[in-house]
Amino acid sequence: MSDLGTLKKFLTGAEVDAGVFALRPDYRALLLAVDGLLPGPSDQASERLLQAAEAAARDRIGDQRLEDLPHVAPWREAYRAFGAKPQRTRNSLEALLRRAGAGLPRVNRLTDLYNAVSVLHQLPVGGEDLSRYVGPPRLVRATGDEPFDTIADGADVVEHPDPGEVIWCDQAGVTCRRWNWRQARRTQLRNDTTTALFILDALDPLTDEALHTAADDLVTHLSRLDPDVQVARRLIAAP
Image 1 (cartoon, rainbow, N blue to C red):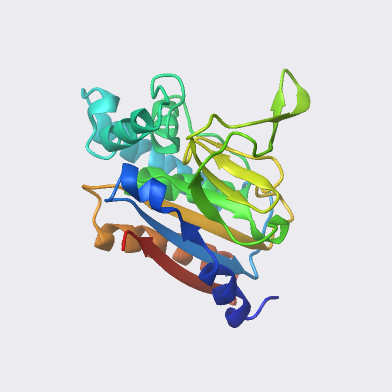
Image 2: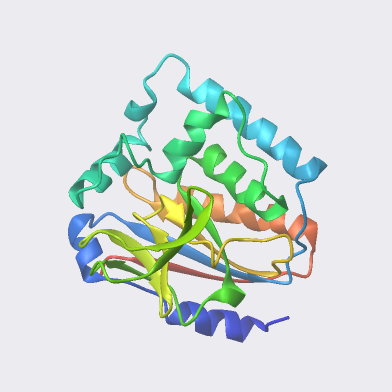
């Protein structure tokens, strides 16, 4: 298990590029580095949490157009700002909300937890296997040369982001394209992941208080898996 100092040091190296804040000065990233996790396949606890998230999503959406929800619309604007078409590549929160009626995905215990927290607290949340990172995480505008490992038509392929696209990356390449649209295979959470990085994304009108409340909820659920987890936290906002 990593000690808390190692986790904090990892987060100290994380950065959000000024070019991203130029697009959205209201953007904030809350990073959680967590070690000592108890991984595994989906279980009864994650199932109950996903069912609660599905019910909450149905109640929240009601008769409204999903794209008009107060915490979905700003992400559509953010995607348009760097040239993405939000009706084709949806932010992770909107993608989950659109699936909630028919049922959220069941992936594994850790992924289920952060997906449920995302829906319950109405913000994009990502989870990555921290042990597979090469250097600290960075949110930048892409050059277009960065490698992104994914699957297309059932085969492993390496793609590249569009120039100017907002991407999370490390020294080895893209870890998530279009801010929070699609994760790379390399750093996905697995059934044997014990050290993870969780990224909670916020745009107005989501407040810092609501952002930290969502993080607290996620940590609570992770701690129920193993009360001895180590958690480091860092909020990155525009200077």
